[in-house]
Length: 377
Image 1: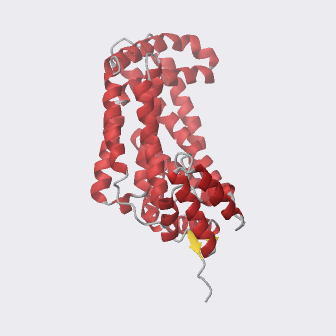
Image 2: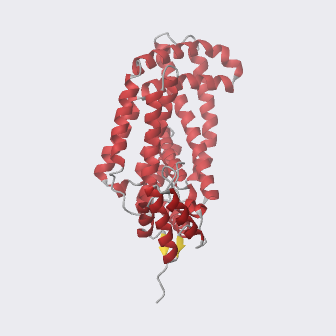
Image 3: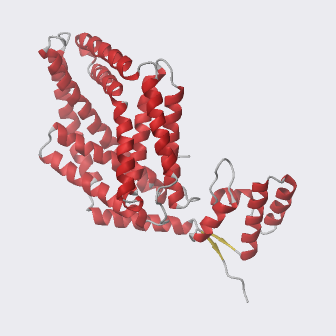
């Protein structure tokens, strides 16, 4: 499923699913990658780990300080264990991007690219070996994955997300203002990390009002990309200076530094106005607006059933779980006489491995997501 909440799930179910899917995807990629696929698997795994950490930050106060610190550190450490090969690859990609932006400079940049590509290969061989590092990372991720179902997630309401979202927006606004006032490399990088958190959180919350939330997703994505490219250029500039000091830049250091400086100035002319739009609200009004949208979204997706219809729905789910095809057809016919078909079940109940269980239905009833009318009399 997508990296977003689903109206058919409770909030605890949704967060566990989102985190679990990211960790499962990371493990699968790391387990199956061979040869040249390993670089792509590492890149994908690191992105998935960041998405899992962002979801964890959103429910930080709900899961509790102890769980948050343990899992955040575990996810961070696995990501760092995979960072060396990816960081080396980014340097090559950054030089290639400069060449695409200024085609006349490609020939001048070519010697530098050769040096960086060789370093990338050596780093990948050293860091990834024959796959042992990937297997080790996959083992660690599986250990984290096994703990997700035990996270303390009980609240099926916006209050489980509220403090996390407010913290993300407040910190991002603060870091952006600091970077705008004093745009150091470190400050710009901090602003990027915080806007990426807001991007992930906006993606998770996108269903609460798709149009406007899509705009926030797009704006934070664009801002994160701009700040990310600025960071890549800063790292490239530092690397080039170090290589020049060793007479190992292939003679292209000056060209690369000039192009990087020019491009960063161009990027920042776009960063400042876009960031001001993203962080136009104060944290409290921003969170209050999202809270209202979330509650409206939840209310409009409540499934209201009569007592008899609810009994028939549960009957069908029980026969599905038992695997009795004949009874399933009979239960389905009884349900259709109440004006409910399989499409209604698919629209209102979570689909795990292609079906829903009586326990899923009972949990939605408990949390008021399926509301059963009282019997008359």
